[in-house]
Amino acid sequence: MTRLGVLDAEFLHMEDERQPLHIAGLCIFEGPPPAQDDVSRLFSAKLGLIPRYRQRARFLPLGLGRPVWVDDPHFDLDSHVHRAVLPAPGDDAAVCALMGQLMSRLLDRSRPLWEVWIIEGLEAGRWALVSKVHHAMVDGVSAVDLTGVLLDAQQDSPLPPPVSWVPGPEPSGVAEVLDAWRGLASDASRLASRAVAMIKHPAAGVHDMRDSWAGLVTFLRRLLILRTGELQGSVGKRRSYAHASASLEDVQAIRKAFGGTVNDVVLAAVSAGYRTLLQARTGRPVTAPIRSLVPVSTRASDAHGSLDNRVSALLCDLPVNVDDPIERLHAVRAEMERLKASHMAEAGAQVVDLGALAPPFVVGAVTRLLMRVMHRVPQRMFATVTTNIPGPRVPLYCMGRKMLEWHPYVPIGQGLRVGTAILSYAGRLSFGITSDHDTIQDATLLARGIVQGLAELRDRARSSGSPASVARGTQVS
Image 1 (cartoon, rainbow, N blue to C red):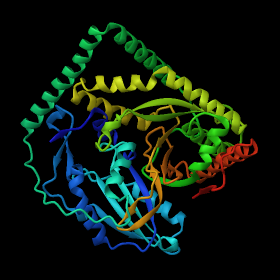
Image 2 (image 1 turned 60 degrees about the horizontal axis):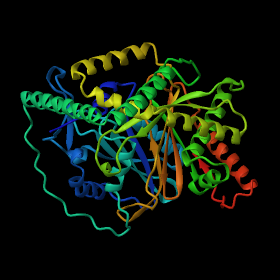
Image 3 (image 1 turned 180 degrees about the vertical axis):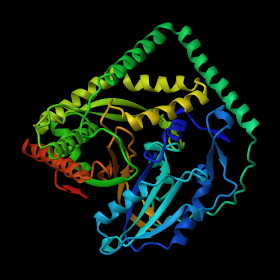
Image 4 (image 1 turned 90 degrees about the horizontal axis):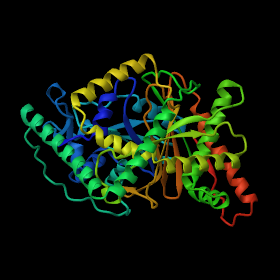
């Protein structure tokens, strides 16, 4: 039995039929596709490395503690591994349409919160795996780590021997509550030890408090600036999906030519995409930036492999109102430098730590109430979400078959009709775009705008005399 973290539990409380909160990956492999039984054997062999895949979330009586992960005594692998066949010709439009359908469905909470789909019939003899995991279990970084466990870094890697598994006994309600309150006492003790450390080292403590307070003030100030735009409003139950891809070498060339970071270049391209989308939807020039929630990992370097959420967030104004691509990149760079100096991410992490002391039954009730209110009055604090996740630099394999592409999926929610996830893999960047099917049916425009934005920057980098090679180009689907 393991307690969910504060953020993990919140993702369960926030979820409803119009706000499925799973993250996913669309992994496309060279053919031929394996049999479903072979994929099941692969997962069976790997499950010993991922104990959470045999556990389900269980809520405590009367909400007297955060939910816990417990072994599922009725675990059945066949309930989690599924198969679908695309109709001919199996082009990318069909893949994205199926992806939208799969992402629109809630995971079954009576079982462990994950599933995979083997998708056959892709053009050129390819096939795909769609891996879908609830956000209560993983964040973007740990989801990438998880995929690295399920797949292989070597083409001829043998399967590990299967390990026998017997589910642990289900804890009683009393035991769950007692464990929850012991955990609450442990959280309080941990925070108290931090306070003692601040007393022992007052200079450092005052410095940290000042930075956290400044970050919190900046965060709250931005939250209070409410805006209404084309991308905000209520969402329905259905999702649409699109993706674009680019050469990481191109992005590096742009960075070398104009300064900043890879993330700055990526956000500038995303800004160009939203500019294209907004101009097409309104028929008017874009005159103001849009605000994006940008998750920031707080995971320590030695914490990779743990399945939980360790993130904070920045509120970034994307300069979609800037016409020139170079000026847009410089605006993104300046904005990110301001946000990093504001200590906003550190303040968010501290708030999460303090949230561990709040009574769980109050937190859950308040969250659910807020979700009901937001169905009627969607939030206007930010217009989109943009998350950038580093992936493996080398190819991965599934039963000897090379993974050719890896496209990420990010959930959206009330007031947030479109979101973008960026993932690097084996020299490519993929932009996975999620949108509300009922209100944003032209998300492919966003994908094309991202590609065009990168192409403009690439061409300007080439003409600036940058020594880097810019040759591999971009793709949109």
